[in-house]
Length: 516
Figure: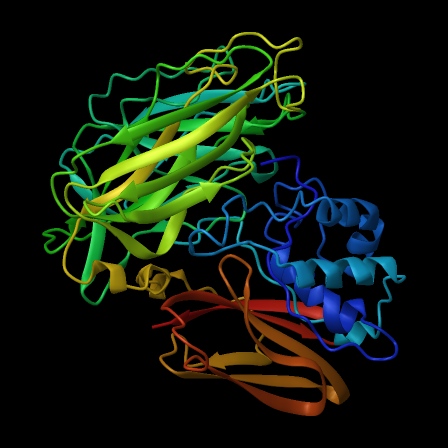
């Protein structure tokens, strides 16, 4: 994740009028929806974009980031395979944003500014069943990034099944990413010395944290319950990445696990492994070298839940796919322009079936030339596979499980829910109420205003800061009004935690709402 400039995900084309588009009526919601998850006061981005003054003050950087396609950070080729929570920006959307930036950035009526998203700096899913935390660590990242690993005992007397996992950064602005592993042998050692620890290669990867990401919640719904085993006496390994410039700043990140209640039954075990890997290549200087890996004769039908390709600084491109027994291609991921700073766990919208006796493939290329701006060596030198960041890797991780009939028909995005009634808080004043909460279908928001004219904007957001529905924008009312949120509107709104954000007469309020 680069020293981020902007995180615009997806926007809507709004019909323009003779006065053009304004921040209050058109652009503010786009910024809230698409940049605020990183660009908020507690986010990892170097500046906030939560109001008009923030946006205009950083307009030049915003324009460059969009015009040069540095943002949004979504490397996968959308025409190759669909994933959940895509951040891809279409051409017409990019044009609309650049046009507003080029035409004087009019604010419009500030009373029409929508209510902003809400970001919870604590644990979204609550306390959980097991919490491990790294000791307070002082970053050594001056002009180079700092990669360190912490091995922490789980102290579990008996094995448990993981239902969800949440990484809570201790200092969000300097946590570039964190990877979480299970070391069943409890032999991997903490490594904070060299600044180049990329994590264990012989431990089970569970998941990780990237700025703006939601907690890892395994599908747990009607017909499908997935989880990962955490054996007794295992260690939890956190591989931490702190960006250049964070030297001297402190962090104490923690990871919280939620387990299925015991006794547990009917949970299908997920495995996570780098099934595709190549450790035998050589990258001569001033050359582009193609590398591949394959895994043949898969013994049973398999369902792929997610995919995580991994290369280092010299990576140029990588593609992964399967070939079945009829030699038909099963598409999985294509990253045409690799960027080490933007790696992620890509969860498919629908699980991908890999039939027995198929072969998995990964094809890629490394650019070890002076033309590669990320090349750490000047002049270029011969590079070999290894664990250090300045070495190279060619891996593709998969979350997978044994296939069962109909796996490919589950909507994974809708099934990643958790029982969330215990996450409620009460931040609204007595003059604003939400009933019922939790809500099954319809929630009513009652608002008692001051005497005379009141101006109200209200929106519902998910925990990642994405707008679900606008309930009111620039609404003028006297004394009292009611808003209705019908959670059955639209398609497939999943169970979970949502935030009601209200701007009443310029004052902001928020409240968690649980949808059952």
